[in-house]
Length: 170
Image (cartoon, rainbow, N blue to C red; front, top):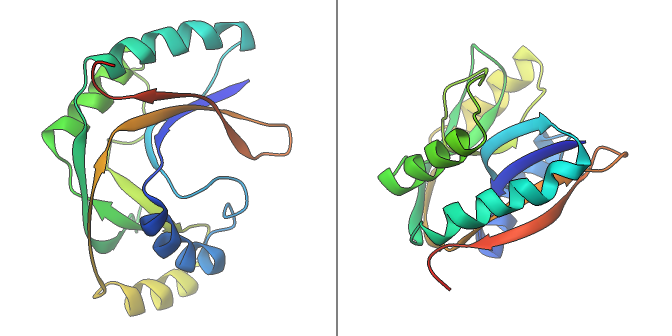
């Protein structure tokens, strides 16, 4: 079974992101707009409870924090992904590091770059056109993050929440 850990932003930010994703992201229907904290990984379904226990402990030791985004950026030339850049705050980076350490996750393909994808799997020409028209767009948004989620992938490729973890002591 495939698992992942994400932050879902507020409905307001999701609506803004979806206004782009429905045109530029083929994964639009598979998962809501999100900030990936830990990339998808394969594990037996029986381990989900252990994952949840670890994540609950991490969440309890993490205070809510501010998520800020201000611009649209791209991972080009590595891949043709266009995204809302999330300012990498100390709290967000610490949360990522703790979760990664809690899962002994050492094999990341890429460095952690906080972002919310708005377009992917674009041809070079599409990417150039879309990014060229969006890159000067200001996306001034700020909100408080007070939870994150353990997801699992269904057979049809869509993702669903296994458990939600609230930040801070309950």
